[in-house]
Length: 372
Image: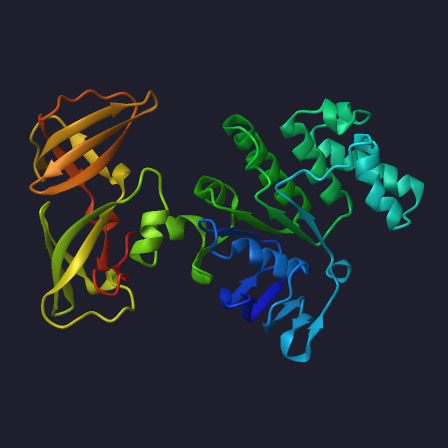
C-alpha cells in the first residue's frame, strides 16, 4: 500500500515562496503526473515527497504514517519512505556493467544472491534490455541507459516510484516507446507512480490523475480527459492542448436557469445542468468562449446549422491539417484529420457541437459552463 497525502505544504527558498499551501492526495496504485511549466513547483513537490527537500510548513503521510511534520521539525529519511527515484539524468555508474548497476542497490540491502539474480532478470525483462546485461553505460544509447535507470529503480520493488522528467533527454520516437513501457510497468507492478513533466502529451497519455501546477499552487487535480475537456480556468485551458484551444470574446446573461451567450460565431443557450458551481455575475457580463480546434468541423458547402467563415491559412501536415479561420474580427483554428486543401479567402462552413464548448467568466477567468 502507498497512499500519499500532502497537507498544507509550504516551501521557501529565502524569500521565494515556491510551494503555496499544497494539498494533494495520491491514492494507492495511482499514476499521478505533476504537470506545469518550468518553475511552477512540480519538481520541488517531488523532492519534498522523496525527502530531498524539507518544507517549512505542512504534513505528509504515507499509508497514514507521518513522514513530514514541519511543526514538530520531523522529517523521515528518504530510506524510510519506501520509494525509489529516477532523475532526468541517468545517474549510472560508468565503471559498472548493466548487471552491476542494477544489482548494486540490492547488495546494499543484503539480499540473498538468488533473490538479487531473480530481481535483476525480472527488471531487465520488464524493460526489454536483457541482451545489454554485460555492457557498460557508454556502450548504450540514451534510450537504453534510461531503461537501465528505470530497471534499477523497479528492481528494489519500491512501493512508490518517483520519476523526474525521465524522458526529456530522449528524441521524439524514443519518448513514445518509453511512454508505452512506463504504462506497462505501472500495470504489471501496481506501484504508485509520481511523474514530473512539462510535456502535456506525456501527462495525458500515461496518467490516471494529473495535478496541474501554476506559480507554486495547485490549479486542478483531475483525470486526464476531465482536465482536457474542462480546464478549471483560462490559464489551464490555454496550457492544455496542442494546438491551443480557441478563445473568442463574447457576452453572457443568466436568466431563468439558462445561460445565453453571444459571440461572433453564433448565439448559444445552455441549460443549468451544464453549469459549474461558480458564481455567475448579475446582468450582462463578458465571457470567453473556448473551443478545441478538433471540435471545429469544416464542410465546403452550406448545410443546415453550418456557419459561414473565411479561410485565412491552410497548413497540411500529413496526418492532419490545421486551418486558420475568420468569423468577423475573430480568428480561430480548426484541426482536420488527414490532408485537406482550402484556398485562402475561400468561404467554408463549420459545425461546432455546443456540448463541447467551454464558457469562462472573462473577469474571474473561471469555468462556468462545462463541456460534455
